Image (cartoon, rainbow, N blue to C red; front, side, top):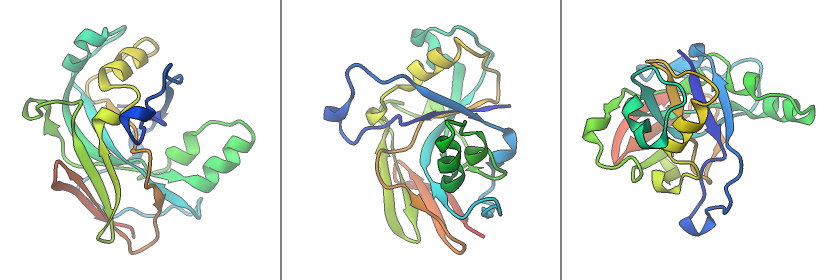
Length: 203
């Protein structure tokens, strides 16, 4: 299983939607980043600045390569909420040398994720409201209509380069505002259409 993610994929309003769009920023994360069951998140010793990013996460349900946008949604069967944690100081150091995002995004436990919701229960993947609270304060709000690249576009683009397999997870980006750092003792609660589905503590 692989986690495929896209960076800088949200704008604050429809009026900010770029024309033409910038090139997709795609990166991957290892399976060992997954944290389930609302387990506590432990800040790794390799960083002093971990930043949260709440995202919609989709589960791939069948194998696909060179997938057309028109049929792309048939390759995913469920959606969840996830936090794409980033070791910001590690990322900054890597960027200084034009290096990759791998270590800053790929440390153990860097992808807490909720239980999945079947897509059959979702009216429109292009109109999903989600949010993140930190210690009871709303810090991020998002709607999937503000994605620069839609889910079908992401699936079609990525599948030109790599085969998607059942169980793979696609992270679709975080809202354009509100990211911030976490510290030990913090509580993060993510809501999907007003319902809390991810709730965990920073150890």
